[in-house]
Length: 78
Image (cartoon, rainbow, N blue to C red; front, side, top):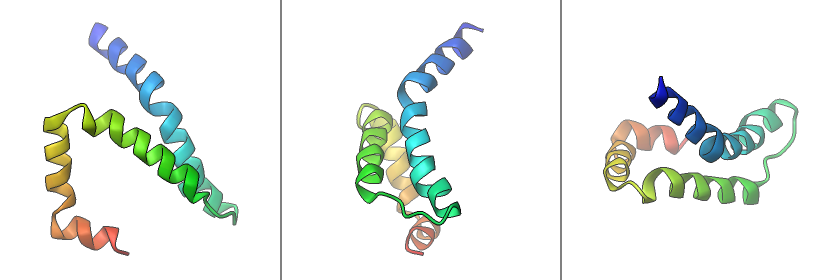
């Protein structure tokens, strides 16, 4: 149970704020006919990437391997 508690705390402090901002800009604004603010998207993607990948070299290597796959590149280019 303690592990779940730690996970929930990290989620709420590190990722929820950034994820909520990205969800608003990238998912909800377009549904309401609004345009995403690219500056906010860039800023929060950078912060999220730093928290997830930069401090964790194994996770960073795993993500780089996945993002270099042809299927991922194809989806990212559309």
